[in-house]
Image (tube, rainbow, N blue to C red; front, side, top):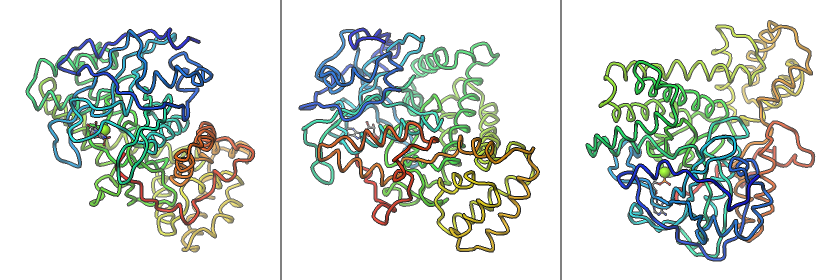
Length: 487
Ligand code: AMP
Ligand code: MG
């Protein structure tokens, strides 16, 4: 473990120079206080959770203090927002403070979101509100605990600084950790501004630091792009399998590393709904739950465009063609596991599709269904789950197929089946109403609920005594909450 002043900085992105980012100092927020910290995320910096309680911790992550070796910078990028190209975005309210090198030999970007205005703020105030900061914190750590690649969150620092959204709120900052903050839109910016040398420099930076294994391939840029396609396919398969809706899949919010990144009005599904739109500003449903798959490919094609100076169009097209089959293979694999299947049969895709259609028609709770399916032997479980379906006969037909399918699995006792299924089917997920309850308490200065919810979500697959209420479907007030897009 290290003391806070012992972090070792190695600011590789900042060293690329002023074409890529602009030096900006964080603007402190008033009366900083720790809202919540993640021990697991802080451990990536060799820090322990007790350090988060020291006053200097809140000062460092609220812009009041800065390490001498930090080199805070706003990164420039552009991107496709809702399908249209926006030529200039960039960090309008977040700063890359620097890169920390940990004892395990990994570099982690320290990014402070809500750190004040930058040359990229456009009309914005450079701030993030407590509500959205808590949501980003909880989602990052919850996704990680589910095994879904994501940026991490070290802490949220609250303040008394007022900010105006639909109403007056309080400013906060999140410490975001990721191994890179380069987005698809970072490369798009240099491509569309025709800064070819900088585009190559940035591509080489990403290649050598994050896709070094591709350097040994005959065509390193192509190998990198193929790996990005693979990672994106796997990531989106995980989102779909676990009911995560990102909400704003603009190319400036797509990480070059293939991790979940830049949380806005995201949601985990309560009731299963293919057409669910979590972002209330997304009137056309461009980023609806089921559209995440084609949009994943669309975003990759936007990135491919920016890489045309280095890779032939035919090769890019061929790599893009891998996305859907890879996605489908990962998704099928994850869903088989969620159903407790260890072998593959041709009809499994059909078994899954039929189940989802039945769940859709009856608004069945997506997470609890799988958890309950593993709780007891297949025949008993389906007889108990039957009541959740309006089309009971339809469900019975599915249940017969499922029981027959389980019977063709290598024999395993129910105890093994349950352990195997519970290990992939979470009991606790970050439901919007749970986040909302924690946010409302935090806005009144009570952080105990955010902290408790974070703890529960850290081990989502393990039943935790006394935490039954966190595994419940939403109460009436908590269904279809309108999550404001403003953050
Ligand atoms: P986001 O929707 O958070 O991904 O942000 C899209 C773009 O708007 C990015 O360039 C952000 O930096 C910028 N932005 C969002 N909110 C603010 C804000 N309050 N002040 C300044 N820039 C912002
Ligand atoms: Mg963004």
